[in-house]
Image (cartoon, rainbow, N blue to C red; front, side):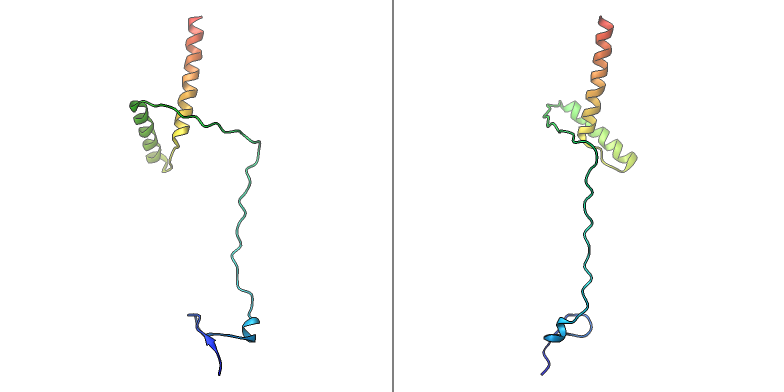
Length: 98
């Protein structure tokens, strides 16, 4: 009696010695995740208290950016840009008062 088991594709696979001599199955190779190059940059976690108006502006900017580019804009980029602009404005204001 010939013992076989169904694999669901074509002929059933033979159990026993013949099943040991099958060609190797194709295995999917995993691509390695590329490491980021460059220097290590430390990250700082900052929690900010935003007013309702500021949060609405951030959400509007994110929506506009998504409509224009099709990509999302992280809130931290908006806050970072706002802080840079604030810093530049503060320096200009201090220079005028001196």
